[in-house]
Structure formats: structure tokens, C-alpha cells
Image 1 (tube, each protein chain N blue to C red):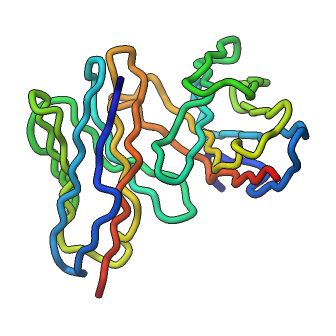
Image 2: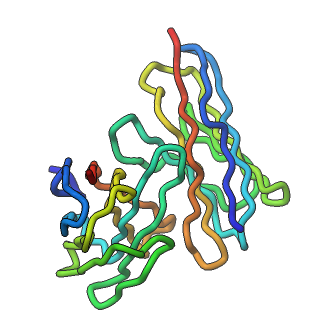
Length: 109
Length: 114
């Protein structure tokens, strides 16, 4: 079956750096997405990786290793507003999106 | 104004009732989707539509039906609601012509089936 694994919850301190990991086993691969979802709100797009390597976008970066079925989202200079769930999703060989359950990130002052 | 809107935002209904959730978008996207979100589970696709004449089942379509009334409107119906359909429902759109086809979600409908 197809599977996306992420930690259920993580805690970090304001101003610090946190890395949220995502591993996947899917039938084929056509890209990996990260979405941010604040409590009670809709998910919003953060990043996309289709080739190996690091994509940087301001305080957020996303890394992909296709051979290892692995990605991470790196958040730097954490702010209280970064408290949210972070959803990893993979597009499989049929271009269907497979979603992880999300990682709830708690930021402490 | 929001680009993707959903009505109602909250709904309480009883087992066996038929209900409809509505979605409208002003983004001009051809592709629309209905997802449900449950605690501890990833988003699961119920139905999707790539244009007005196209309707496709997702991974959990049983107990649901949809109607694509226009490019801008995609409604989800629960023919006979049951308690395990209690969930947060999201409508989403996407643009196939984008370099990266990202999803744009509506604000969600929180449904409770008693």
C-alpha cells in the first residue's frame, strides 16, 4: 500500500530551528508538497520538490531524497505564528496526491 | 473576498438525513476536489472533477455524491448521513496550467452527524 509517515507532534522554541521529517512509500513519484494548516483553517501551499536537493524560500526550506523516499521541512527563526500542522503529500505515478496525517508543531516562548 | 468559499461552515444533522455541502470559486480553475479530514488521518479524496462534464470517484466515495453545476460550483451530497461521516470537509481547486499544480482550499465545513 501507499504510505506517508510524519511525526505526530513536535515542540520547539521561538527563535530556534526545527526539522520536520517525512518518509514515503508510494507507487511511483511525481513530486512532493508541503502544506501548512493553522488550527481550524484550510491548508495552504508551502513548498514543492520534484528533484533531489534543497529548495529554499525565506525562513522555510524543503529537502528531497528520492532514492531514500525522504523529505524534510526546515523552519528557521521560529515565530509563534509558525505554530500549525505541517502536511506532507506525494504525487504518485497516477498523479494522485497521497497525504500524510500531518505534524503538529508547537512553538514555546 | 475569498477565492474558494464553502457553505455552510458548520452543520449538525441527524442519521439518515440528506445534506448538501456547496463550494464556489472565483479563481477560474477547471479542477475541483472534495476532501475530508479526520483527526490522525491524512486528507482523503472523496470526488474530483477536471471540468464541468467530468466527475471521478476518489478513494472514499461510498455514501457520497457530487454535482458540478458550473465551472465555479461543485457540491457534495450525503444521501443518508451516518455518524462516521462526521468530519471536516474541504473543497479545493487547482490550475492544470500552473508550473506547479498546487491546491487552493476553501475554509472547510465542519459536519457533525448525530
